[in-house]
Length: 103
Image (cartoon, rainbow, N blue to C red):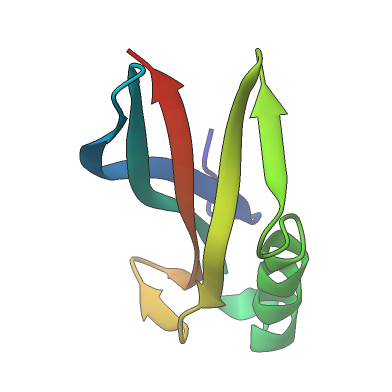
């Protein structure tokens, strides 16, 4: 549960597009996995930006991440500039992904 006294992360998946990939019955799914790093404004910018870099280092470009036999490939990643909102300083980390899913 978010608290005004400590930092937290908000994660969300934004599916973008589904295209037929093969006649054999698989589709290509692409989208964005976003993590917003939020810390109280009085925590200091260094703490927030350091945590954002830790989140960014979780996945490498070209890496395949598998869960329950479904592979997801990381195409790109980036950290957006930070901003203050609602008493928190936040930095957005985004991973563009691609997966090939059997129909």
